[in-house]
Image (tube, rainbow, N blue to C red; front, side, top):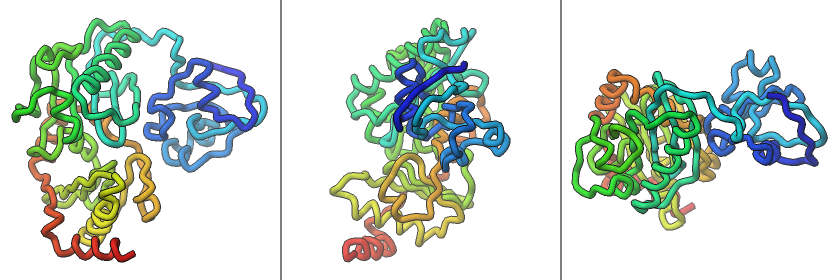
Length: 327
């Protein structure tokens, strides 16, 4: 779709949202799906991260980080909100809540078909459940789907039990009747959970990543080793900032990762340097899990080899903490 815009050093995202365009991840630079054809814009780091060399050469750019000064005609390659979306014969759905974002979408045939990205949501049952219900209903209505077949539900430890409304241990890694969770689907799938540490979200983020890779996503730290996945969680809050910095140094010092990956915005880790920003794998992996028993089995294996680090009892971590505290 070709559109004409006029701006005075104006955010292209803001201009396009006023025209009814919906940015899949809210313009946060997490998904790389807000593609436009606009060779007048010089490729940015975000373009180079998400787009192929062929796309860049053809004038494809991402709209979320551009500014327009003057008039321009742009070909938009993603959906306008007021256009009726393509009808889907069936769809599954996912809702994943983390402290670095809320991922909700429709999937079919192992692919994300439509999605929204929202800011982190407070850990209250009615807020989380209502958000999952409302956003999925809007998506299935937009695509004329009667109801989702299977809906994947996952969250971080803080939000998981609030989301499900169930406080006792529960089966995971399999499907359950959606009426137990009052969700707009026939069944609910809860990805495998590592003890009380997480609610299925971490496995969705780590699946498909490389051995030797360190991942920082919100409060999560993870290192993917040969036989184990080492993890820790430290809230990225002012009162725990020193512990957070120490944990980052601990993982770097102990595991010497060959790749360092940062998911989402994080001033602390960005300032540390050496980390490469990447899009979250949660939407892609959620869609794959909904379609494939092989992926479900791989998630179970990943969780089975996950270990939570006992940081307070570790001498290396205490050294890192003392160094951070002493400047």
